[in-house]
Length: 236
Length: 244
Image (cartoon, rainbow over all chains, first blue to last red; front, side, top):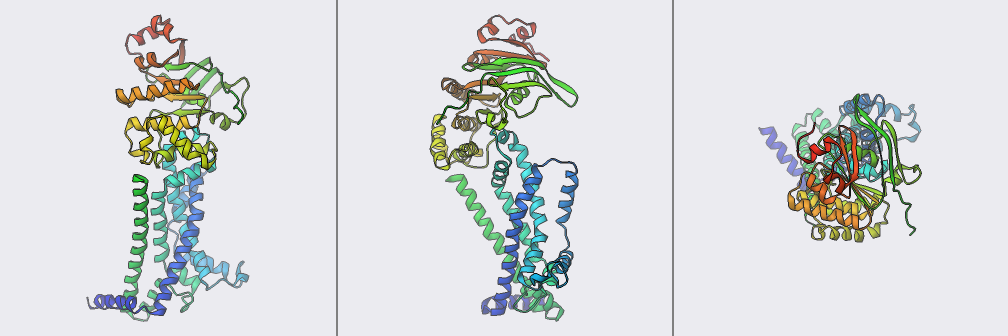
């Protein structure tokens, strides 16, 4: 109980003091994860939609594989990206290892399957409803994908949030490719891991509470935008 | 703007459709011309909806040919842009009523700045002018079907297919839909509609295609069909004796 009490005090202190290091850590966490989710949506929405509308031999296996990739272990992704970006790896010359860019790449790889798999399901459900009508209108494949993604926008917002939750909460991938370098690649989760290993449990817990509040704030904000949009669509 | 090529007449020859090993439509041949309201009449399960979907190009026939105009038009998508279809259960997008009409116009490649005006015109035509901003899926059943007709109206089709458009509607909404169908007819759109409702067939049809068990049994003027049906099946159907 004492630890939790101290953690709450720590969390409050961190926020109230507006500590520069702390703000830097929170800012980098948000920047890395939001950017990764943005890229993952740009890739995953069309990918999921195309898969939803395609019929080819072995499609079932592809769908099952994609669904399985939702459970991709972050450390494995981190390791693979590490190998690709390390000095001796194929992309070593870019010098990206231990930079925020490397962390964004790793999280994008982690989140894209989640976005694509959930989008595939959403779009496929909508397609079974809209298919004949769109066919009747002479819709091209691009028309169809555009229509289904737009009409699935409320479900797809939740999909993006699921991706964000995955990105902001993971520690394995950013730790390996970022290296947890103070004020360069240190994010909330790696900071928590570090404070825990130093035995600084109150601080770790305080950071954890801030992380939770942050995730809550992002979800709340997007839900607010979503309901507003729905209300506008309903009343405008 | 140049006048689009006339896609009628519609020539269906030796059409066969099979699904799951069963032959659902047998050797159907007919020719439909512009200017008349054609009603495809028959009991449930006769193959009316299938026939409509085949003609509209939503499904492909197992055998036989469907020709539009005097030659086979190469691009089915271009053909479909001169046709519209209204389904028994209207498929409405998760947008406003106006948004639904504008979406159809955008797929017909109508320039963005013209869409709003054309959509509003179509909504006014169908008595939905006040409901343009309402979410389409929150409209009543009758309003939804009128919206489907507004959407079709906006794209100025040469041929309008209607698949049991009033099967789920009450009498007042049914009358509203039938009035709109007559409006399409008056504007020169070819009507091809299915129904199992004898009264509706009598109110709407200029000519009847009577099908039963996947075969066309009669193809005649509406007056002729109702006053002197030629086949025993049609006689039984008109008398209200169920056919299976």
